[in-house]
Image (cartoon, rainbow over all chains, first blue to last red; front, side):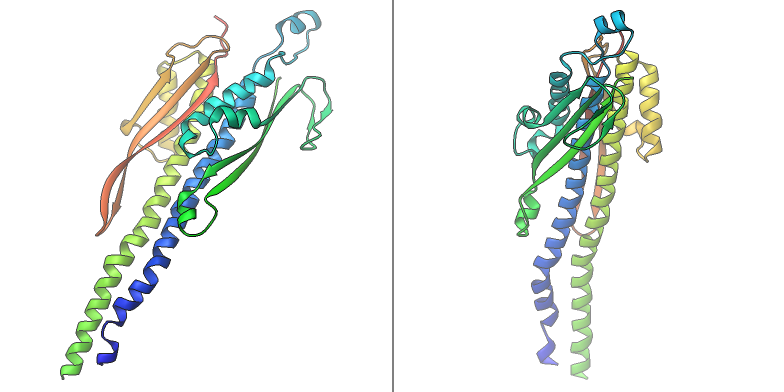
Length: 158
Length: 130
């Protein structure tokens, strides 16, 4: 019997890093899921903010809804503003992430987006962004300490 | 007889180790899962609320009622939530931020019991031309 004494302690000690690693991975995965949702919502809100406006002069003269000339910078501005809350988790600043995002306006329709292949039947603003975020708990268990979240969002003026 | 007593003692030690270490780990997975679920839900509510605030021109009773209804729908008690709308009255094309903050508890048996602040916010654009 003396050969078994302490075996439980040894088993626990051996398994402890594995168990803590699993817990850390689960927590980081959950946090990453929230961050991905946050970045996706930021892109959605940004394109909506840009597409909610229209060119008033074009609407008066032609009766058609057209995107204003500043649709792209407005989308970038709101993308950055919506990333602000998760700024501590981002590798770059929200402004830098928004500046690097591929933002495109499609005022003339119908149009095919060369990046996504999406077809637009109404004037549309589209964001495609790759946002690197820090995942320190992954780093602690020898997984990548930076994960890139890719998002695509488009909103149409109607 | 001595050997049997030793074996019983060993089982007790093993059980104690299992309970004290594995139960907090198990509850950690469960509690953080719930926490992230509520955080995701709060993010969604904040995004919808920001759009609603932009449509109605800022903060008012209908926005508060909308947020309370949405929070209740995702299992968050609105009474424990602090809502902030900045600015209170938003003009056309101006940004409006809606923040939703709630205190959530994490209880891990034998390990820790604490509360964390879940904070979600979203920025939308004012749509009312006053």
